[in-house]
Image (tube, rainbow, N blue to C red):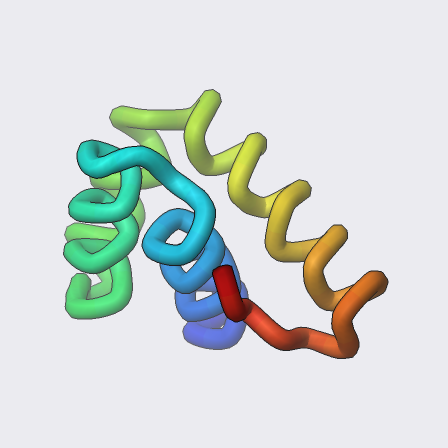
Length: 67
């Protein structure tokens, strides 16, 4: 996983998730390599969902992550 992917998914979680997912996204944005892999492994359904959301936001808004 690249830092860019980590940032895209983390930002999508923060801007589009509920309170738990937003907090998880905030942690992801601050995580080192080991901890970002822990988050991805522990919450694969969130990772998949918010990767898709980040992709959609990039396609429809030119990468804007506004709520």
